[in-house]
Amino acid sequence: MACELVVFDVDGTLVDSAEIIVRCMRKAFSTTGLKEPSEEAIRGIIGLSLPEAVGRILTEDMSQHLGEIVAEYKRIFLFDRQRDPAPLFPGARECLSRLSAAGYLLGVATGKSRKGLDATFAQLGLASCFVAVGCADDGPGKPHPFMLEKVIAEAGADPASTVMVGDTAFDIEMARAAGVRAAGVAWGNHAPEVLTNAGADVVATSFAEFEGWVRSALPIAGDVTIMPTI
Figure (tube, rainbow, N blue to C red):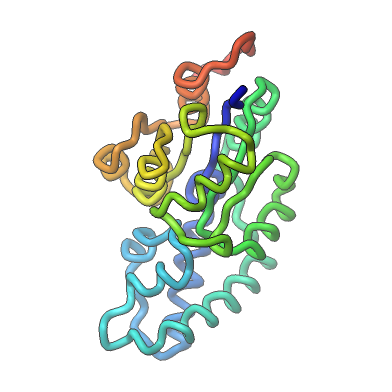
Protein backbone atom coordinates (compact mmCIF):
# COMPACT_ATOMS: atom_id res chain seq x y z
CA MET A 1 0.00 0.00 0.00
CA ALA A 2 1.46 3.35 -1.05
CA CYS A 3 2.20 6.00 1.58
CA GLU A 4 1.27 9.66 1.26
CA LEU A 5 4.51 11.58 0.78
CA VAL A 6 5.13 15.34 0.88
CA VAL A 7 8.53 16.37 -0.48
CA PHE A 8 9.89 19.82 0.34
CA ASP A 9 12.46 22.02 -1.29
CA VAL A 10 14.67 23.76 1.31
CA ASP A 11 15.99 27.20 0.30
CA GLY A 12 13.11 29.59 -0.23
CA THR A 13 10.49 27.05 0.84
CA LEU A 14 11.37 25.97 4.38
CA VAL A 15 14.41 28.14 5.04
CA ASP A 16 14.58 31.92 4.57
CA SER A 17 18.03 31.83 3.02
CA ALA A 18 17.82 34.24 0.06
CA GLU A 19 19.63 37.07 1.83
CA ILE A 20 22.65 34.96 2.77
CA ILE A 21 22.79 33.31 -0.66
CA VAL A 22 22.68 36.67 -2.46
CA ARG A 23 25.32 38.14 -0.16
CA CYS A 24 27.66 35.18 -0.52
CA MET A 25 27.28 34.95 -4.29
CA ARG A 26 28.09 38.63 -4.69
CA LYS A 27 31.17 38.24 -2.49
CA ALA A 28 32.28 35.22 -4.50
CA PHE A 29 32.15 37.25 -7.72
CA SER A 30 33.81 40.34 -6.27
CA THR A 31 36.67 38.48 -4.60
CA THR A 32 37.29 36.75 -7.91
CA GLY A 33 37.57 40.18 -9.51
CA LEU A 34 34.30 39.99 -11.42
CA LYS A 35 31.26 42.26 -11.55
CA GLU A 36 28.66 41.28 -8.96
CA PRO A 37 25.40 39.90 -10.39
CA SER A 38 22.11 41.54 -9.45
CA GLU A 39 19.91 40.26 -6.64
CA GLU A 40 17.24 39.41 -9.20
CA ALA A 41 19.69 37.29 -11.22
CA ILE A 42 20.84 35.41 -8.13
CA ARG A 43 17.32 34.79 -6.85
CA GLY A 44 16.45 33.40 -10.26
CA ILE A 45 18.96 30.54 -9.94
CA ILE A 46 18.41 29.58 -6.29
CA GLY A 47 17.36 25.95 -6.18
CA LEU A 48 19.74 24.70 -8.84
CA SER A 49 22.93 22.81 -7.99
CA LEU A 50 25.75 25.27 -7.34
CA PRO A 51 27.81 24.74 -10.54
CA GLU A 52 24.72 25.02 -12.74
CA ALA A 53 23.47 28.05 -10.81
CA VAL A 54 26.76 29.89 -11.20
CA GLY A 55 27.00 28.86 -14.84
CA ARG A 56 23.62 30.45 -15.58
CA ILE A 57 24.64 33.89 -14.30
CA LEU A 58 28.13 33.95 -15.80
CA THR A 59 28.51 35.88 -19.01
CA GLU A 60 30.36 34.15 -21.83
CA ASP A 61 33.59 36.03 -21.13
CA MET A 62 33.48 34.89 -17.47
CA SER A 63 32.92 31.18 -18.13
CA GLN A 64 36.53 30.24 -17.41
CA HIS A 65 36.00 31.40 -13.80
CA LEU A 66 33.23 28.88 -13.01
CA GLY A 67 35.31 26.56 -10.80
CA GLU A 68 36.93 29.48 -8.99
CA ILE A 69 33.60 31.12 -8.17
CA VAL A 70 32.04 27.85 -7.01
CA ALA A 71 34.97 27.21 -4.65
CA GLU A 72 34.92 30.79 -3.36
CA TYR A 73 31.16 30.69 -2.79
CA LYS A 74 31.47 27.48 -0.76
CA ARG A 75 34.20 29.04 1.40
CA ILE A 76 32.26 32.25 2.02
CA PHE A 77 28.94 30.52 2.58
CA LEU A 78 30.42 28.13 5.15
CA PHE A 79 31.76 31.06 7.17
CA ASP A 80 28.55 33.11 6.92
CA ARG A 81 26.31 30.14 7.72
CA GLN A 82 28.22 29.41 10.92
CA ARG A 83 28.10 33.05 11.99
CA ASP A 84 24.52 33.83 10.98
CA PRO A 85 22.45 30.75 10.03
CA ALA A 86 19.34 31.27 7.94
CA PRO A 87 16.08 30.77 9.88
CA LEU A 88 13.01 28.73 9.05
CA PHE A 89 10.10 30.66 7.60
CA PRO A 90 7.37 31.33 10.21
CA GLY A 91 5.03 28.35 10.41
CA ALA A 92 7.37 25.87 8.71
CA ARG A 93 8.23 23.80 11.77
CA GLU A 94 4.62 23.63 12.91
CA CYS A 95 3.47 22.54 9.44
CA LEU A 96 6.03 19.73 9.35
CA SER A 97 4.97 18.58 12.81
CA ARG A 98 1.26 18.54 11.98
CA LEU A 99 1.71 16.72 8.67
CA SER A 100 3.91 14.10 10.32
CA ALA A 101 1.45 13.65 13.19
CA ALA A 102 -1.38 13.21 10.67
CA GLY A 103 0.48 10.31 9.05
CA TYR A 104 2.20 11.89 6.07
CA LEU A 105 5.75 10.88 5.24
CA LEU A 106 8.05 13.84 4.66
CA GLY A 107 10.97 14.10 2.27
CA VAL A 108 13.39 16.68 0.88
CA ALA A 109 14.57 17.38 -2.67
CA THR A 110 17.10 20.22 -2.73
CA GLY A 111 19.84 21.72 -4.85
CA LYS A 112 22.00 21.98 -1.72
CA SER A 113 25.01 19.70 -1.33
CA ARG A 114 24.81 16.87 1.19
CA LYS A 115 27.29 18.68 3.45
CA GLY A 116 25.32 21.91 3.28
CA LEU A 117 22.01 20.14 3.87
CA ASP A 118 23.35 18.22 6.86
CA ALA A 119 24.66 21.46 8.38
CA THR A 120 21.31 23.18 7.84
CA PHE A 121 19.43 20.27 9.40
CA ALA A 122 21.78 20.25 12.39
CA GLN A 123 21.44 24.00 12.97
CA LEU A 124 17.65 23.94 12.71
CA GLY A 125 16.99 20.56 14.33
CA LEU A 126 15.25 19.07 11.28
CA ALA A 127 17.15 15.86 10.57
CA SER A 128 14.57 13.60 12.22
CA CYS A 129 11.66 15.07 10.26
CA PHE A 130 12.40 13.42 6.92
CA VAL A 131 12.33 9.79 5.84
CA ALA A 132 14.12 10.35 2.52
CA VAL A 133 16.40 13.05 1.13
CA GLY A 134 17.64 13.92 -2.36
CA CYS A 135 20.36 16.54 -2.92
CA ALA A 136 22.78 17.88 -5.52
CA ASP A 137 25.36 15.17 -4.79
CA ASP A 138 23.02 12.32 -5.75
CA GLY A 139 22.77 12.85 -9.51
CA PRO A 140 21.18 15.19 -12.05
CA GLY A 141 19.80 18.34 -10.44
CA LYS A 142 16.49 20.13 -10.85
CA PRO A 143 14.43 20.26 -13.01
CA HIS A 144 15.50 16.70 -13.94
CA PRO A 145 13.22 14.25 -12.07
CA PHE A 146 16.04 11.98 -10.82
CA MET A 147 16.27 13.53 -7.36
CA LEU A 148 12.53 13.39 -6.72
CA GLU A 149 12.19 9.86 -8.09
CA LYS A 150 14.97 8.78 -5.70
CA VAL A 151 13.12 10.26 -2.72
CA ILE A 152 9.84 8.62 -3.75
CA ALA A 153 11.52 5.21 -4.07
CA GLU A 154 13.34 5.50 -0.74
CA ALA A 155 10.13 6.51 1.03
CA GLY A 156 8.21 3.57 -0.43
CA ALA A 157 5.69 5.87 -2.07
CA ASP A 158 4.64 6.31 -5.69
CA PRO A 159 4.02 9.38 -7.88
CA ALA A 160 0.25 9.21 -7.44
CA SER A 161 0.63 9.53 -3.67
CA THR A 162 3.29 12.27 -3.70
CA VAL A 163 3.27 16.07 -3.58
CA MET A 164 6.32 18.21 -4.33
CA VAL A 165 6.35 21.69 -2.79
CA GLY A 166 8.78 24.43 -3.73
CA ASP A 167 9.30 28.10 -4.43
CA THR A 168 10.81 27.96 -7.93
CA ALA A 169 9.84 26.87 -11.41
CA PHE A 170 12.63 24.28 -11.15
CA ASP A 171 10.69 22.52 -8.37
CA ILE A 172 7.44 22.59 -10.32
CA GLU A 173 9.07 21.38 -13.54
CA MET A 174 10.78 18.55 -11.64
CA ALA A 175 7.45 17.51 -10.13
CA ARG A 176 5.76 17.48 -13.52
CA ALA A 177 8.60 15.47 -15.04
CA ALA A 178 8.24 12.92 -12.22
CA GLY A 179 4.45 12.74 -12.60
CA VAL A 180 3.56 14.10 -9.16
CA ARG A 181 1.35 16.91 -7.88
CA ALA A 182 3.13 20.25 -7.62
CA ALA A 183 2.53 22.94 -5.01
CA GLY A 184 4.20 26.33 -5.18
CA VAL A 185 4.73 28.76 -2.31
CA ALA A 186 4.37 32.51 -2.78
CA TRP A 187 7.02 33.56 -0.23
CA GLY A 188 10.11 32.29 -2.07
CA ASN A 189 12.37 33.25 -4.95
CA HIS A 190 10.09 32.97 -8.00
CA ALA A 191 6.92 35.01 -8.43
CA PRO A 192 3.56 33.21 -8.10
CA GLU A 193 2.78 33.67 -11.79
CA VAL A 194 6.07 31.97 -12.69
CA LEU A 195 5.06 28.97 -10.58
CA THR A 196 1.59 28.88 -12.11
CA ASN A 197 2.99 29.05 -15.63
CA ALA A 198 5.38 26.20 -14.80
CA GLY A 199 2.38 24.01 -13.95
CA ALA A 200 1.80 24.36 -10.20
CA ASP A 201 -1.52 22.89 -9.02
CA VAL A 202 -1.67 25.54 -6.32
CA VAL A 203 0.42 28.48 -5.12
CA ALA A 204 -0.05 28.83 -1.38
CA THR A 205 0.39 32.13 0.44
CA SER A 206 0.94 30.53 3.87
CA PHE A 207 1.90 27.18 5.35
CA ALA A 208 -1.62 26.83 6.72
CA GLU A 209 -3.08 27.29 3.23
CA PHE A 210 -0.60 24.78 1.79
CA GLU A 211 -1.36 22.28 4.54
CA GLY A 212 -5.09 22.54 3.94
CA TRP A 213 -4.57 21.95 0.22
CA VAL A 214 -2.40 18.88 0.85
CA ARG A 215 -4.97 17.34 3.15
CA SER A 216 -7.63 17.86 0.50
CA ALA A 217 -5.58 16.80 -2.53
CA LEU A 218 -3.87 13.86 -0.81
CA PRO A 219 -6.12 12.81 2.09
CA ILE A 220 -5.21 10.22 4.69
CA ALA A 221 -8.01 8.02 6.01
CA GLY A 222 -8.89 8.94 9.57
CA ASP A 223 -7.09 12.31 9.54
CA VAL A 224 -9.26 14.46 11.77
CA THR A 225 -6.61 16.90 12.96
CA ILE A 226 -8.08 20.39 13.39
CA MET A 227 -6.46 22.83 10.98
CA PRO A 228 -5.31 26.28 12.13
CA THR A 229 -7.11 29.31 10.76
CA ILE A 230 -5.51 30.62 7.57
